[in-house]
Length: 406
Image (cartoon, rainbow, N blue to C red; front, top):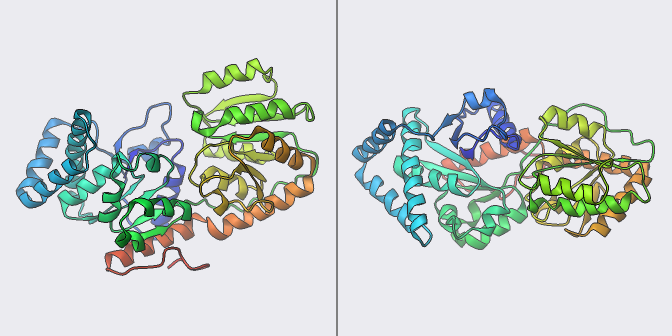
C-alpha cells in the first residue's frame, strides 16, 4: 500500500511488486487515492489496485461496524493510538479521524481477502493508515522508508511509534537507516533493515562514448528540492567552452514555469529542452542518446533514476548528500559534488565531456555496481526473506550478506 499509486515516479514500487510475484509472493495492491491524471502511471496497474478513497458511506459504515463487532478491544486500542499519535491542533484531530476512518476500510478489505500482513511504502500519512489498519485488524505491518521528507517531519508522522510497532522497517540505504535510528527506540534497531530499491539489468551494450560529449540528461520533479536552477546556471557557464552543449530535462512539477523563465533570461533556449514526463522506455532511450547524467538535488534518498543511468553505462555527476555515496563511487563510477555548487558541476561535467575514455570506464564501473548491489530481483528476495523470518519470530541481519538473497 501507499498514498497514491501508480504514479509516473513509482516505477520502483512497480518493479518491486513484479519481482516479488516472480519469486512466488502473492501481492495485493492498495492505494489511499488515485494520482492526478497528470502524474498517473500505467492504466493496467491502476485497474488492479484497490482504492480506499473515495469511499461510499455504506462501505465505510459496514467496515467500522464489522471491526467493532469482531473486537471492541482492538477497535478501542486503534482509536486511542490515533489520538495519541496526533500532532497539536484541531486540524490534526480532523486528519487523524480521516486516517482512522480509512484504516477501517483497509482492515476490512484485508480481512475479506484473508491477508495477514500489510506493507506500506513511505512513512507518512499512508503509513499512519497502515499502522491503524493493522491494529484494527489484528495483523502485522511493516513499511519502507525513503526520506528525506519523512525525516524532515518525523515527529509529525510519529515515526518513533511506527518503528516501534512495525514488524520490521525496510530502509533504502544505510544512511536512511541511521536517520530512522535517531527516532526509533533502541529495542527496534535490530528490526531496521537495509533493502535497496532496485532496477532490472537489461542485456543491452554499454554506450560506446567514442567522441567528445555534448548531451546532458536530467530527470526528476521540477521542484525546489531538486536544485535544477544550479544546473541551469552551470549550463550557462559550460556553453562558453562547449557551444554544442544540450541539456534535456525530463519531468514536470510546480516550478516548471519559473525554470523556463530562467532559461530565457540566460539565453539558453537552444541549450535546454523541457520534455515533460516520459514513460520508462522513453527515458531509457534518452539515456542511450546521452553522454552524462547529471543530478542537482538538495535532498534525496537513493534515486532509482540514478541507478538506471548507471545501468545504461552513463557516467553520473550527483550531489554528495544522504546515501548517494552508497551508490556512486566517487572517481570510479561518477563524481560527487557539493550540493548547490554550480562551479563544481561545471568542473566535473567538463572533465567528462572532454574524456570519452573516462566516460567509458565510469559507465562500465557504474553498471557493475548496480548489477552487484541494486538488482531488483535480489532486493525483492531479501525483502521476502526478512518478511518470512520476521513472521517466524526470527531476527535477521541488517543487510543481506554479499551474493546471498535467501
